[in-house]
Length: 395
Image 1 (cartoon, rainbow, N blue to C red):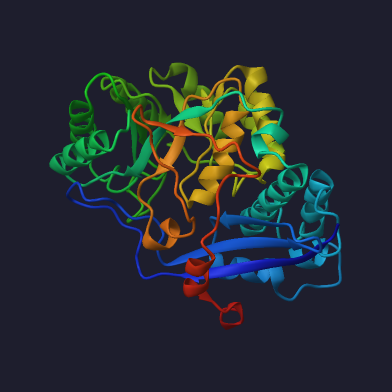
Image 2: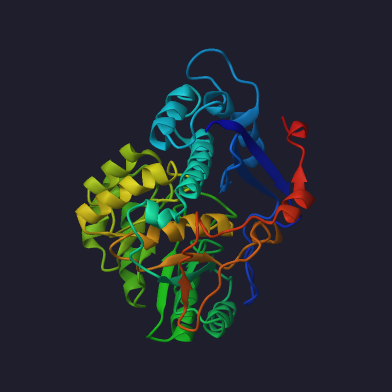
C-alpha cells in the first residue's frame, strides 16, 4: 500500500472567536479551519483537523518545497510511502522539515498527518484506534463543557446553569476577560461555583498572559501565579490550567508543589523531548497534550507511558472539531485512568459542521467511546465541499 496524496483542505466561515457578557455560548475559531486528508492507492483514507494558522499550513503541506533535506514540503516527503509505517514516517517528516520546522506550524501539520496515518492503520487492521493502542479500558468518559469566561458574574451563573441543564457534571471556563481585573476574576469564579454547586467539577484555564486573549500582555509574575493558585482553592477548583508562560518550565516545577490547586498544562508542548522535560521536572498533576499540536498519536502514546510512570493523569487538550474529540477519546479509552474528556461546547458553525454525527452526552454526563473501526467519526463531505476555499488562492 502506498500514500498517493496528502491534501490540505481549507475551510472558510464567517464567525469570529469571541466570548459573551451573558450566558450565551462563546465561539471558537469560525473564520478559518484546516482539514487534512491522506489518501492511499487501496482506497483507505484518513482525516484530521489541525489547529494552526490554516492558510500558511497549506504551503507547508502541499506548496513548493526545496530539494535540500530539511526544506521539503510534507507531501513531497510522504507520497509513495507505506502509510502503515507510522513511527518511521514521523521521523522522516521531522527530519525532512527540520530547517523550517521542528515546532510551530510544521509540527502542527505533522500532527494532523500522523493522526490520519493512525486512522488508516486502524482501518486496515479492522479495529478501533483504542484497540490498536493496546485495548479499550473504558467504555465511557466524563465530559467537561469547555468554554470561555463570560464578562459578568450574572453571565457566568447563567452559562453554568445552562451546562447543568445539558447534563454536564463538569465545566471548564477559560480565557475571555479573565486576567483583566483581579477583583472581577474572583467574582466570576465565585458565580460559577455557586451556580454549579458543590457536587460538580469546576476547572479554570486563566490563560498564560493575564490581560486576556483580547489584550495580550506580559505573563504573570511568579508571585501572581502562586496567589492565583491559592485563591482558586477557596472555590474547590479541580485544576488550574496553562497559567504560566509555556517556556517557563522551572516556574511550573517550583509552583506546582506549593499550589493547593492541582496544576494542569501541556497543550503548548510538542515533541517527546519537551514532554520528557516537563513531566520529568514535576511540572504538573495533569498533563494535557493536544493531539493536533504535540506530534499526533505517535508522540501522545509515549506521553501516556510517561504519565503512567510518573503517576499523573493525562487529559488531552481538545478544543476543536469532533475529529479531534474522536482521536482524543480513543487515546483516553486506552489509559489506566480516564478522569475527563474535554468537550468543546463553543464550536462555531465551521468547526461544528465537520462531523456528520457529533458526540453526545448520556444522562450521567458521560460520552460513549465508539467501538467501530478507526475513530468512530465520519466527516460530512457535503459540508466540507460547501465551505472549502481553493488553496491556490492563499499560496
